[in-house]
Length: 210
Ligand SMILES: Cc1cc2nc3c(=O)[nH]c(=O)nc-3n(C[C@H](O)[C@H](O)[C@H](O)COP(=O)(O)O)c2cc1C
Picture (tube, protein in one colour):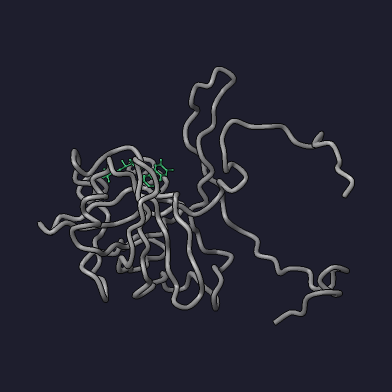
């Protein structure tokens, strides 16, 4: 293989940056005492089609970490664009100090299969039963959740896809000035849905639309 020089790239400090634009989650959990809480989560990935599972890394220092082990259940909530302030808040404040449902006024909604509330203002909520807890490093464990039930806001989807006029929150991350002073957390807007070009020479040669 002839290697080209990487002159089109520059090295950046923050790992995984090319993959930073995505819908974050509010990870909702509930303790044995009945109190519900949520944190902002970005360290997660969906795994497989059927059964559909999700892996999320949760810091041992969070209030959520203990709650997950108490009930063995959680809900992942996909926020709308209007919920950016809640995403910033829930990523900074601990449920040990503040009742986040009370502070945000979010609506706890009755779930189908678990005892953890859905969030009424969200674009989607998924209920999970924890099927595995995997040690990751000294600060974090990975929790594997099996999907029990998924709820999408009425009218937000067409088949399996978001509709063009749906408003999921696309989180970008923190912007910094030249002195590395934070200019705040940023997000992008979702719009304009396109289909892959199956008439491109590459797809025409190797892949059929199915
Ligand atoms: C954008 C963003 C993503 C985050 N992702 C995670 C995550 O996936 N797992 C985690 O344990 N903490 C994550 N955090 C940090 C927690 O949201 C934060 O520590 C929170 O205050 C913990 O809340 P709790 O103590 O009520 O559980 C994230 C924070 C931000 C701002």
